[in-house]
Picture 1 (tube, rainbow over the protein chains, first blue to last red):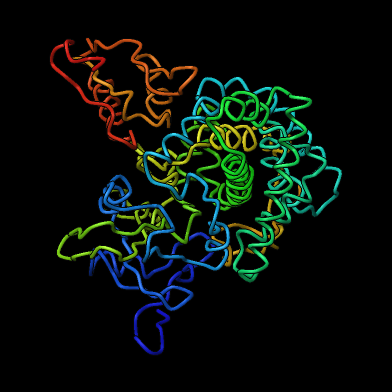
Picture 2 (cartoon, rainbow over the protein chains, first blue to last red):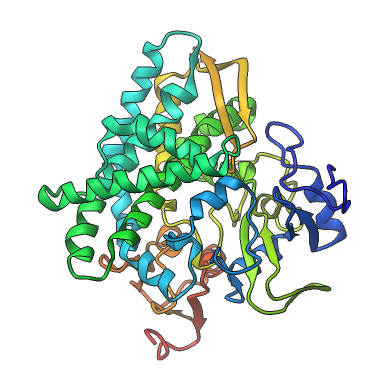
Length: 400
Length: 74
């Protein structure tokens, strides 16, 4: 594994073993030490957790803070550092009670039943982009024509952001999340998106719609519960967290199914299996490959290792989801896996707020794509994006 | 056996409502857990396994089981 030349400590994040296999280092480290020293992009050191039980326990332990303002917080990339910002912190990077207060203002928007009610809207968005894919002609790029625009259109509709602005927010979202860009470039993207959302919030006050942003402005900001800067932070989190992750899962999901024809055949024979397919894709792909960062607020022992107060910890959900002591034959993509208690959405109080929406989008996108284009196949031309904080495909050429 | 869920801990992730809608729902204003039917009569091992899955999938450990219904809704 690549190591820091001065300290000989492994440099994180590691490279994936191949397109669909997490880094081999995880297996090695899981067997050797529950908590391993790693160096981050800026030379800082942190602990890496690779075992399922340790990752799960740490993410639900209040002694580990998600607040990036705490000294010792481990930043895995300049982009993460920029997206956290200095002044305005999204609730993803806050601890209770402030986290709980801000998150609960949004919980009701993502109730499972409410998301089920969005099915017709999501179906019509998915169908629109299937037609766009077909119209693009063979071979077509499934990422640009299908995987990327669907989550953007869905979150835009839910949040109340005009989809016609999607190039503006997608481009800046990429700058926020990719390590190709400098700290300054990522930070500028954050400032621009915050301004954009602030102006949009003003327009919602004048002319509200049936959307999350309008409700936040009219119900929460007006009552004084939610300050404008926090409103912008929450809106930005919803706008950005929802589209890159789901887009990558749709693209990689199609790729994974086409690469596993036996499993794909099971799904075709029994479309009811789609729910389990989505869960196994979430586990198998575990796209948050830079892990979940935390900092210890007091001394905590994990196995034989003492994590000291102020030390950073990266809980690798990818490593956890491939831990053979929890998932038999983790390297097998097995859509009938039962139970499948993966940690792809994290665990603890910060577990993904949008997960019912992500699941619904994946179910509908995969089902309708293969229903409409049953002969869909790969042309052998795809480019992967390991440099992003969330693993994905830049392009995926398909034919039919 | 009775389901004992704590809405004070709940962050509304909806795992319980997704996995076992016969017993769990979410409050429409707060998104937090609502026990629709606290009593579990079934001796069916599949139902029991699903209940354990629900308990272990709750990200904030807000769900437990009790032998009597008195503690429910604490």
